[in-house]
Image (cartoon, rainbow, N blue to C red):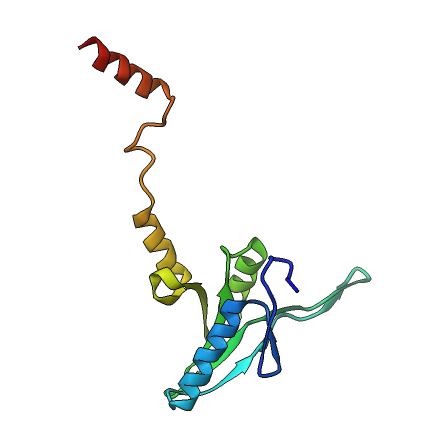
Length: 157
């Protein structure tokens, strides 16, 4: 079965994950827990971003954010993890801002990219891809007026 983003649902240890990448991170957390590198972790923790309210006779539902993982570190810090397979949606970006405003914990967005060594933060992935992408200004487009003129000049020399 696939979810709305085309990811295949995965079941591990009786838990359902929205993607293969999410299940891989779960396996990594289990290993970190077994090797006593983290205190504990939670699956699918919920965070209230805005209470439900009534205005002008209309009831507005609460807004919640459901993360993929909550990791409790040995130093007492808590890190909230969200695993993504594609660039974050506008809805996620808004919820991320609301979360950062309301909660002290850090929210880390991770992507699973084996070509970059496994799990990588969204910020680091953007940096790497920016360096890898060739600049559009350096290379003239094929079929553009600039490249046609350049060919004519070379032929006339």
